Length: 367
Image 1: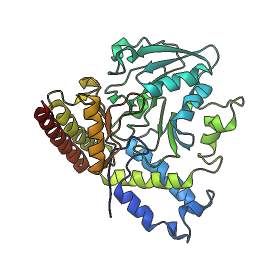
Image 2 (image 1 turned 30 degrees about the horizontal axis):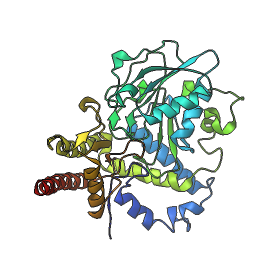
Image 3 (image 1 turned 90 degrees about the horizontal axis):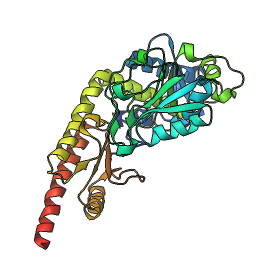
């Protein structure tokens, strides 16, 4: 069977083992005689799948008992609105740190709900770095502090998180959740669209400290954390297929050795490609400053538009997909989420070296 080398930014690569298991269970899930897509979300068979997904995430991330795990819809983009609607009361201010396009979008939605402030930003430097923790001008009375832990477009990632004391730290971890160990207790809310490290698009994981879930009848039911928590994320019909695949990806993560082992693999994968960039004598140039480099999204440019265009054409012909940079900034991007194997990263690095040699040889002939 032909399988491409998938470096898409999202929806992204899924583990082959997960896809094969889903294929085997496609027509008969849990010995029900039905596909998972045909099951009632109120059935015992689906309840088992649903609860297994939640429990597996709790185990993998070592989520404390005073946190609720919600499986919602609407992507991270809906959380941009849900978070201030649930956490930002009148008279309070929400603080935001800008590190890329997604944090900008989160701020834009929060402004529609209440008072906000930008307490640190790398925008003036084209989002090439993550602000230093000591440069954050946090309001100690803020309703929360919002960060984007990994920036898919610019290829930057938080290495150490801000210590916010009594202020809840809220993190959009859509593109690096489950990629490394974190201390969940340091956060008020962690949220993530599933389509990069957790499963297919259509499901959003929200990990929220229980004391932040409050009854507020003025919030529409579907946007109210309290409603979803009381109903075990089954207030309305959930995306059953996406939750099933989420459960399989989480089981796969356990089989890999858990988050610690996955983190080791991710560091090795990233090093292979960054070494190709750093060893190219400037032919490939990384967008992110070295101390802010992402282990999930590696962004880089080539010496000219001609070289870039030729690279993207030839790399696609060689069986690699998803290497185009985001349309807003161009360039190239390799997204190496958990399911991308080390061998694919090594093959990409080899291709980069060979392309550089061939391109330079061609230029030398012309001159």
